[in-house]
Every structure is written in structure tokens, then in C-alpha cells.
Image 1 (cartoon, rainbow, N blue to C red):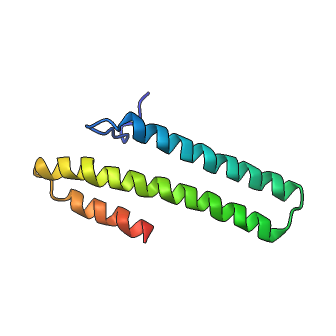
Image 2: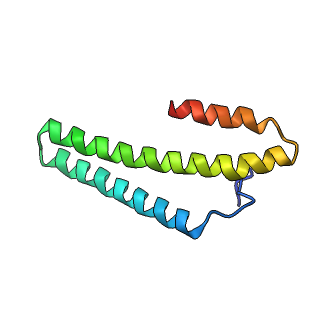
Length: 98
């Protein structure tokens, strides 16, 4: 059964963006798996925190890329269709990253 709350974009993401996001997410997943291994191996806290910062940075960059994509496609399309309320949603998303 499909979830009724699931939304899909009207405009597909470019293959280039999808590939870039996938690479970056896989890198972050690899970094987080390394952190788990470092914890098991009782590694130095500073090294673990450095690895966590790298993973966080990778995820933040993906968020920035997707927010830009959202603004340039979804938000623009909704405004063109007369839905100015999408601006409130966009502002809420931006506030999450500040």
C-alpha cells in the first residue's frame, strides 16, 4: 500500500545531480561506518570527532544542493501555479539549515 503522504517532484532531477548526490551520500555512509568501527576499536576521541565532522559536512552539502534544486524547481513551479504559500515552506526549510 502506497503512503498517501508521499510527494513527488513534477520536474525530474537531472541525472548529473542524482549521480553527484548519490556519490556524496555514499561517502557520508562510508564515513559513518568508519566511525562505528572506530568506536568498536576504542580509537582516540579526536579522530572519531574529525571523522564525524567530515560526515556531517558531506550531508550538509547534499542538503544545500537539494535545497537549491528545490528552490529552482519546486518552489518556482508552485509560485507560477499561484501557490504563494510554498514560500512559507521554503523559509521553514531554510531555517532548518541556519
